[in-house]
Image (tube, rainbow, N blue to C red):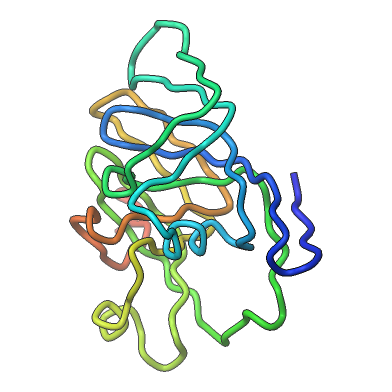
Length: 177
């Protein structure tokens, strides 16, 4: 699904999946924002209201609960995923370089690309990262301890305050050398 944006300030419906410590919350949100990180970082309230919601507990075999709407506390959100791809807006672009990183947001691990200002590198940029939620692209996330299999998505917005580890990531072949 690809979203097209017309006039600024126009409300549109955006699908979103929110992961908390205990639940996967799927629904839609009415927003005038262009990007998931903007929705989360510029929220006027300490919560989001999603519509057409399903709630699933990790590892549960129960049928997901359904609700017309649900309020989700932003402080409890580990990360959010949007299944809609958003075409970049030229006026929002800032030249950046991509670094592959590992983020530990218990019980999840997330590996993907973070986008940093040029000529700084991940080490220096860690002190410059700001925002309640940080964007990670081409991301894979999983939580072995609770039985959540690896999923690869185009984008996740990670709760910066709940990320316990943020480090460079390089795949290592254990059989090499």
